[in-house]
Length: 260
Ligand code: GLP
Image 1: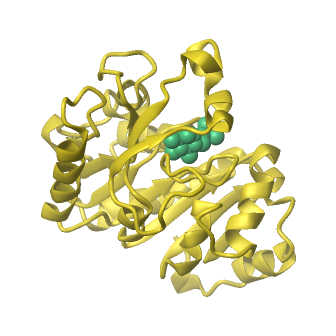
Image 2: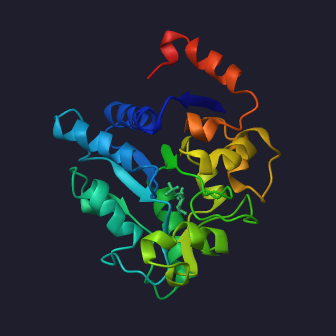
């Protein structure tokens, strides 16, 4: 895992955005895995700004989002589909038929999840997967105890995740209990993973995922097994990493050909 420590949130978000932009420029019909939450907002803002300057064309790119709340339709203000519309889809030239999302209103969740997996497979697979991390180490909505081989399926949120997301719903009791999420195994099949973590509230999960044991108790730790994973953090999220000085040295001395 490459661990990149940036001075602040916007520098970390820009680092991730540059990698995604390079992917779109190198392969205009690339398949991107997208994430929601506060963390990627700045990533999308940077990509939108590049698009508005005429430097980034999304017309052939294809996207798959990680997760959605069960029971929320695409027009619900708290749905992840609406989040993506607000921050990215309405501001770039992605074609609607190239945008893929778990359907929170599906009548048959297992069949829908199997179709979602099949749709990813049909495109040839996700090339760059953007990820955030939950304060207890989830990726997508793969809560602690998720099978590290899991595929897209229904999950039940932990009380901690419901509390973390309560601000968007006006109370933890209003947060849906169930979600549809790509599985850990699904995420691990992406050719490249970019996990961005910002702020002191993520420091423990970040240290655990990068330097702790690989365990379903902290699902993001499985990314230690991913052959191409970058962990991009700000100083606050890096605060509990034991080897942070080494990671900085590696980054500062990276060969020119490895830089974005
Ligand atoms: C949600 C999402 C995750 C996200 C996490 C962290 O639970 N399902 O994909 O990484 O929240 O969110 P934030 O970036 O707001 O801290």
